[in-house]
Image (cartoon, rainbow, N blue to C red; front, side, top):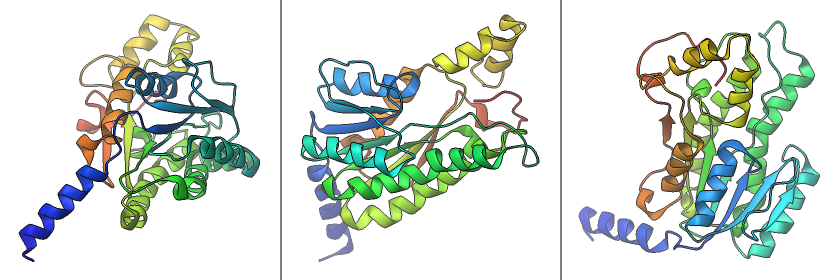
Amino acid sequence: MTRRNRGQQSASAAMTSTPPLAVPVVVTGAARGIGRAIAELYVERGHTVLSVDLNSPPPLAGQPRVKADIGTAAGRERILRAARELGRVSVLIHNAAYQGAHGSVLEVSERGWSRTLTVNLTAPMLLTRALVDLMPHGSAVVNVASVQGLFAEQGNAAYNASKGGLVNLTRSMALDLAPRGIRVNAVAPGAIATEGVLEAIGGSPDPEATRRDYEDLHALRRLGEPREVAQTVYFLGSAEASFLTGTIIPVDGGMTASFMMAGRPV
């Protein structure tokens, strides 16, 4: 067999084994924001979606949902039991994140640091390991990282470290799961108009100026929309991305296109 023929056969196998429409999908952090937008997009396009959140995910067109803390063994077991009811998991999306531990390396509490790393970094690895036997050849994992995994924001050490770790965990997972035919990629959103970001803007002393500050972090001079991140996640989980693995895609309106000092949480 020539090298060209081997490559052609590999590409063909990847395309034919990529999950078809209406595959089962698991989305963590699906109660609101980017996670909710991802779940809604998959449902719109005919998929079965298991929505997972620390808070009860809102009903979504009769789709299954589970309230679980992904940072605990008991929570991950609940997710596994719900996923088994689906029969298989063809796309696993790690979106859940903890952002409550602000402070520099000299200030952040040990408890806050631990919770941030547990939810944002350790849980995606452990949940993937728990669900991997339900994932057939051609499945995909998509991690929702952050531009703060690509550069650091001063005074947000725990979140920076967790998202930077998730970026490299994505690459490690891609290498480790490739023999199973499972692709692993990540998105790195900039400032997105989620409920949390809009609440932060609205609660500032000068909301109009604060919004401009957020917008000016991006070359496109606006906030991103959750749906824009969801569309990129959907692409990475689809047959259209069958030769992408270990890739990190910034969905950041050009934020990381130039050197800058980030002055707002994203």
